Image (cartoon, rainbow, N blue to C red; front, side, top):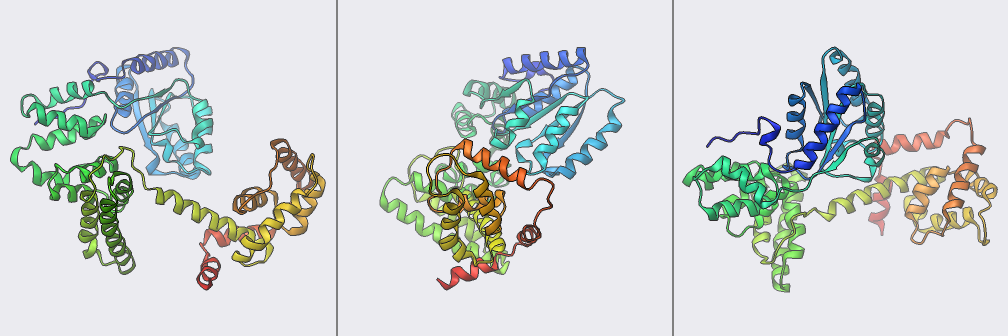
Length: 435
């Protein structure tokens, strides 16, 4: 079966208005010799990158593409900016893909600086619009949000690719399973077109983590196909399946059956990671598939393991707690349970009315913690932080910065940062084991 990407913009299905907007943007950029970068966001497989490439080709630009997975740090971006200077003699357009994968600290500010100073047109592409990209997006015009392709759009795409090689029922199944993702639809179409061998080959299909999770839940798929989908990302997909089971279980009996298989898979995964015995991997994957088949309800498309967010928060709080503990010379548990609530009250005071910023700064210095540790550590970790008005928070920041203007950072803060970089969380773990 012959699968072919669009060769010109006119062959692209959907996103008509966005394409017109981008054409106007690049034409104006060319005429004026400068302008703002463009920002494209939307779910995978809707054609963002393809449109960017075809747009450049149509208006006579060579394309230089950079992906955030190639380098997420400020150093990588500075290197990128230096290397691109060699291309300034020719007319080129820079495509920066997956910018939502940039590191929060360093990567995003470095890219923002590049966008401000760029002398070539840039198109930034992202799947999502996280808060960390707010400033970056504000520099871009146009900033376009691409929606998933409609069922009619996918019908047109599949019609040109499949011809008469599949039945209407098969095509409808592909469109439903793809959920607006043209890339996923074409991958499934290729497998459908392979005939009777398709079931065996589908195990090696290219999935996104979302389509893979739904393939595992799809009861019409053979067990081997579901296992192949789970194997496409054997760490993430089983976790997504476990998350989806909680909402898809229609009865308590189904939930218990799924939970039993999830626990079995977790035990196998723990042993596999600890011993590096990867022969257990097929059994760990089979547990996830069995859990998915134990529930009968509908599963939302955007499954994402809540455990990842909680684990990330736990590690963040652990680092904050270690930072405060190292500066105050308390154990981690003593800092959290005894010291933190007192620090919050001592700094803010018991009096009503405007915050006494001079006394608050003096108290922070007496305790031995800086303003950032207090605002981002102490107040994040206490069970019930005392209320502080926005104007008081701003006044405290100004007062602290004024009192410490020109002073070097405390050595203890530097030592704490070094310890945290090396991952020294032993103290906290030891204290927890004693409880």
